[in-house]
Amino acid sequence: MVSKNQRKQILQLKQKKYRYKWGLFVAEGEKVVEELLKAGWKYHFLFTTKEPFHPDAIKINSTEMKQITHFKTPSPALGVFEMAQPKPFQNAEVTIALDGITDPGNLGTLIRLCDWFGIDELVCSSTTVDWYNSKVVQATMGSLTRVNCLYEEDLAGFLKSLGKTIIAADAEGASLYKATHPTAACYVFGSESHGLSEEIKKVTNTTLAIPNQRALEGAESLNVASATAVFLSELFRDS
Image (cartoon, rainbow, N blue to C red; front, top):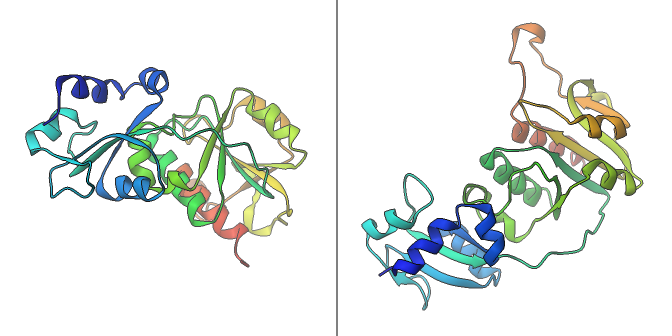
């Protein structure tokens, strides 16, 4: 069963301040929990409504799982894990940066995209949603074990210090398909609703867009995760 103290702590971990106070986060879903365990991430509690998948997993009923889940519909598995130790920035040839991405599902998908394309780290503005948010963790489907997220208060200054071409994704930019892509560059993506911050615009060297084939009659914008997928596909076309 789930103790009263366990239930209280798990529910408090919905809030960022408690996650960083205790250095813990909640992962829900069999795939995500299994990936974290396989990667050797340390855990405090493991719960399941099915047959235990781990010697330390506690079997509970569906009513108990509903009392501790962070979602409307609970998953069969839930774990409380320790946050990973921060890793130093590697500054690979291609840097992906996120400016003000607030939707947890989008960030989770972006982390999965980086994992797919072999990008080991994401650089995020301080206004980007926390990657330990439960919805982000679930949306990554375990990719957070292979992609590191770094948060920078001054994202523009940080990117400028890397000494690489800074390329921003923006609907007003030149065609992505006609551009020459430098070997080393930072690609910055902003939120669908607010776009890029003025600070990022000031340090941008080039702005690229995915051409809208319907011009003024089509959709006003692309979802940031969809746009990033198109960019990455183009960058790694010859891989």
